[in-house]
Image (cartoon, rainbow, N blue to C red; front, side):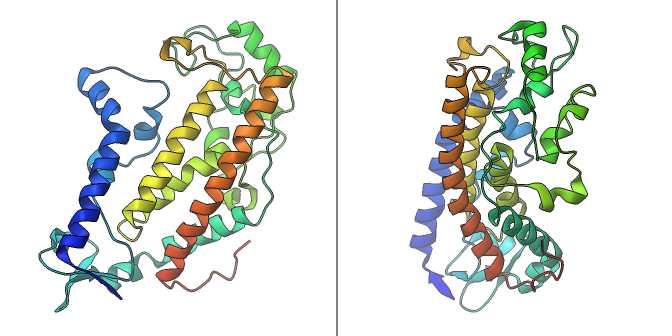
Length: 291
């Protein structure tokens, strides 16, 4: 058990808050002004972690906070004679979640990264929609409705991520080479998928306070960068926001997308391993049905 003195853990908590403030500051300004953003709002609407929770610092397992730590009053913690630690009873309560997350992340890590999807999930979400029915209706489609439909119809779509697939339009669903379901998530997710790699942020904060907040912030930062590529490769024209398109309908655009996807997959692999280490540090027994 590592013991952090009060000056040590306060420095880490303050550094974490400064980092998060820099990452989310523009979002908070837009939120207060009532301005929507088609790229960054996703990190606070699709993902349910509130900014105040993201800003809160947790040390993770195996750490005692000496001195007067506010954590002693927070759910998931337990005061001892040496200081404040994660509550073993709370960890035991999360055992099923810990096993589920480990099964999913381990299965994902066991597969090769597929980088041939080219972000067509966003195109499938507006396929054959009428004007005014697109997801981000304030922003025009770069190729128009007919041009967008032509891109979908001229490509093979292979989206393995259920939470992307569930937003496909009805005409687009049969065009996907797989039909993802929630129950088969662990059998399908693969480490090249942008959404699977963004979701490392979701699993990190959902395990909080068991996850060290530095890891949560690393996952958030990666998700924020991936989201930019996700929308640059989408059918929307976001040039007015400073996002130049990745034209995945062209050979050059496909190569650009796949190269960025590979780099994100490498970074995500390291975060996935760190998150698995956190899960293992909490000692849930392995599931006998791990894929």
